[in-house]
Amino acid sequence: MAIVNSTGLLPLDPEVNPGCLPVLYRDEHLVVIHKPAGWLVHRTGLDAGETRFVVQTLRDQLGQHVFPVHRLDKGTSGVLVMALSSEAARGLVQSFERQEVRKRYLAMVRGWPAEHIEVDHALKPDDAPAHAPAQPARTRFERVATLALPVPVDRYPETRVALVRAVPLTGRRHQIRRHLKHVSHPIVGDATHGKGAHNRWWAQYLGMQRLWLHACSLTFTHPISGQCVEVTSRLDQSFNEDWQRLLTEGWTIRADDPDLGQTTR
Image (cartoon, rainbow, N blue to C red):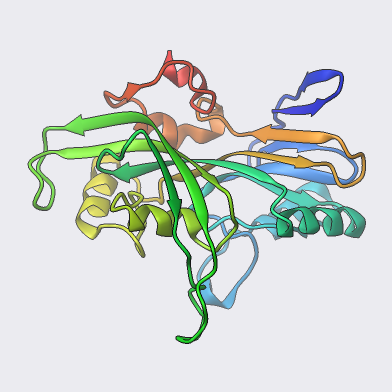
């Protein structure tokens, strides 16, 4: 985790307390947290049975109002930024709308995709009417690790999965999930776009059921100071224990990957 500015890198230690959301960075204008998988960003009638909400929990944790400026799906873990003032919120929302925020994700996908893929495939919003045009959408993917287990699942003689880094170049809803489905390498644990047999096998094998998608990093211009801020949630940090469990398997991992941290050693 670091602020990146003209003077170099200033390291920041995450503020992690029992029962609290891990705070990766905080100043008087904004706060960046690690969102656990399974948490909603805010209340919604579409998931009335859920009781864990980032906005309400963080408000109580910090003792002040917070302004959500972007979102992660319920099943996605990782870096999430909130504003602490309306002025900062406006600036951050504009940065996201202008696609000036750089995002980096890791996903576990079915099969072994090519080492580098760029998907340029327009997407229509999920709730758009049938006649609505699809919107341009581009994502770059890079394979960083592979794993094969000698267990037949579905019609395949063995189970193959890969870790891929995803860098969305546009900001469509469910873009990474839908683009990986488009290239026939859906994310494991994706109930909407994935493969049910693989999802069920991995949930039983790992003893946990989740969408294996992680927001590793956000890089953006601070809405007040104008500095460039980069905040990361590496997989070797204590609050990513689910990913650490996954990485105890016999992966072939590219050395010194920046998002995997010490799990590569």
